[in-house]
Length: 436
Image 1: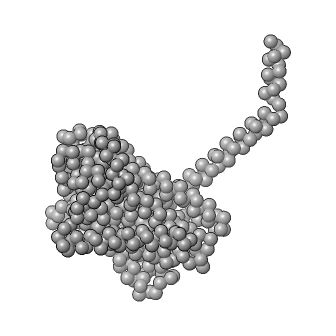
Image 2 (image 1 turned 180 degrees about the vertical axis):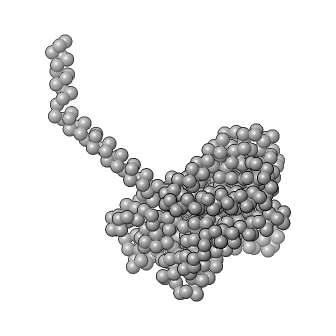
Image 3 (image 1 turned 45 degrees about the vertical axis):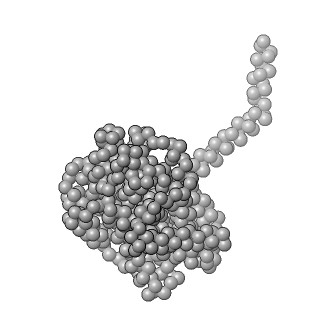
């Protein structure tokens, strides 16, 4: 037995075993290094992802679920696929050129054209600000019963505070926004657990496209506008600048690779939350024969139908969404204004200006949920502009270098822009013929 034990000890200490241990250790060190490198690059897409789970999404998704059951979930899926493609293009443009999209437009297009681009982009930013500001206001009102007008003013103050934290660096903003995204995600995990949806129907309608009538087209285009938002296409190309350290071709390729991982994680979290909004609305409201026309109705109805925990989670998610997306909207507004026409307006003044439309809607007693849906439809009409701008710039090798768009990517971009434009034309026709 003793000799047998000795032979085992010897076999465990052969040179081959030592080299295997060294290989394992080396692999572990490499893996740890890769994870640390990835963590350094994570962040920009999480800031951008807030736009995909903002109060506009709450409005369109709740409307879609309560009116059309699970039939519009496929819109969320395809909108998310488009969003991943467009955000990757935006990040690539920023990494390749060292400038954001509005700055590149200022270099490539005539000054008069850039003024037009700026006006259109600002209209989009105003529609975005309207949705986000209303969302934060509604969240405070539903949770704490603070009158709407005071909730609106408080939302503005909290947004100022979040934006002020940028003085401590972009990473600080990314941490705050990512925390709020986590709050929204947890709230909807609770919602979907309590709602007990029909998962077979969820699966079918995620895969099979269906538009029951003209009103469904209105909601579908609103979902598209709420998911593939123009202001964050401009913003993403700016946010990646903070990570641009190695400007060699190899460094840019690595940066883009890391950013693609960042986008894949953040956008798919946003997709799950968006889909959960539709699923919960369908499982709770449509199943009960209830069409939800206001956020307050959605909040109040959840409590008797599936409990107070659900209504509380809804209010918290809406508040976190409104506050985080308001801050992101402010950052996007700075990028748009400075880039296209080199205008520098103090952030606080710009925020006060963009608060006015929302405060008017609140004071006039207009249904905030309907205003939210219409604001998202407006964004869908504005969306083709940044896409066309990106496609025009990203096909030029003299500007993009090694990251220039290939023919297949250009074709895919043109296809996405065409689909969005055709959907908008259909919506206009249905609206003017009274079918939407």
